Length: 260
Image (cartoon, rainbow, N blue to C red; front, top):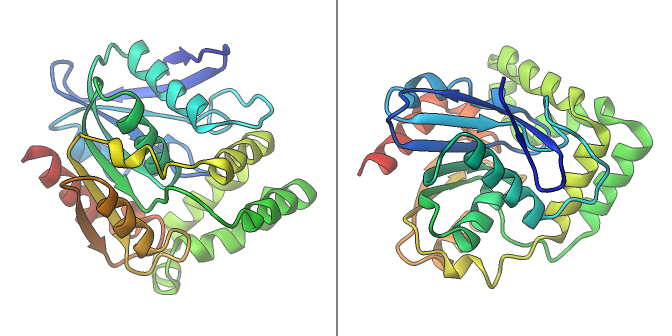
């Protein structure tokens, strides 16, 4: 796979699918996953877009320097991927951390972004303690012991029971994530504050929320939508990784938003 080079030299692994002359759709993953979290969406989306997906630093086949990372750093990493792929402008779809980086993109790279999908995400954590606790647990115990609790937060009980294969795929991605990379990204999420910048976004925005999402509560998405003029909200019957739990509905919702 091709590799982009971040400002600090970190290699960022990416993948391109779809017609060379189609508009670009840049995808951004959740914490603890790699670019394969979009496997259910990429085939359909690549019929309409030049789909560009990548492994965030610290994840997948990208470099994993020690943190802390920042949202500025992660946003510039994404721009390095777009530049490497020759994408002067692009649509954006990001879930969880991907929606956080998307908010950075909408506020800091307005000339690059066409439309934004911000999915299962948040803009500011007033209470930092849960992130301190997660970082300490990961550092002390490793990611395999954190995997079970994460899958319980990321998927509803019903989906875990009826669809073990996709849950196991995500769990494997999570366990294989570089520990330093995971912690660095946790620090970026813990420290982000988009309260002032997100209201400055001018691109058309769709916010996706999971009705049963305990990780990024639905009200967080509604708050983001209220901050951005003209933003619309789409609710899916899912927990956190709504693109995996409701793949067909997610795929169609994004396509409908981007096409109109």
